Every structure is written in structure tokens, then in C-alpha cells.
Length: 125
Image (cartoon, rainbow, N blue to C red; front, side):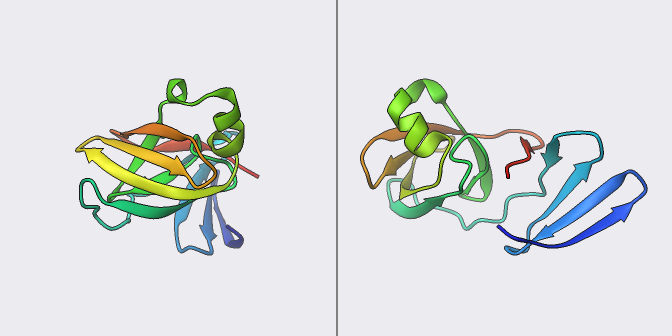
């Protein structure tokens, strides 16, 4: 995502990105607090095409109206290198209310759990 504008207000910086998502960054901190997820609701058992961002599944996964956290124990080291920490294309399927499976088009999969509470993430360049 390419940054459009950065506003500085005291010790806070608000970054608006091209997808229209605003991320609040606290100065001197390397984490960002994300606004509420705005993705469409998913139908259980239905695979949806999914593009993993350039920082992989460990960064930001917005699916079924919520953020998700990948379970790293469900990926091999090769899968982590391919889509855990890098961009990828595949499908994501809601399997239970709070569980989803990502399947890479190149092979391999990972389990994700619905995030609870405020979502913060690291800055990814």
C-alpha cells in the first residue's frame, strides 16, 4: 500500500493509505493500532480468493469482518518463507466461527484464528 498523506498532531501521526484505511501511529513506537476491520462477511465452507500482503500472514489479515492471527505452528519453515512473511495469492475459507484456513496457490496452508480485542501490528516496509 502506498501512503497518500501523513498528518502530525502533537505526538501522534495519522497515516492514510491508498486502500482508504487509516492507521494511527504513536511516535517512538514501532506498532500501529488498526481501525475496525471492514471486510465483507464470509460464508462458512466457501473458499474466497485472497491476496496476502507483502509482509505475509503474520502482518494484517482482514477477512469476514475481522482481523485474524496466523497460528505459526501450522506452517512449515518453507511455508512461512513463502506466505507467512511474504506476499502470496491463494484462498481463505471460514471453517468455524473463529477459525479460517489459508491455502496458497503454490501449495501449503495455514490456520488462522479470529483476533479478539484491539488489533495492533508492526510497521512493515
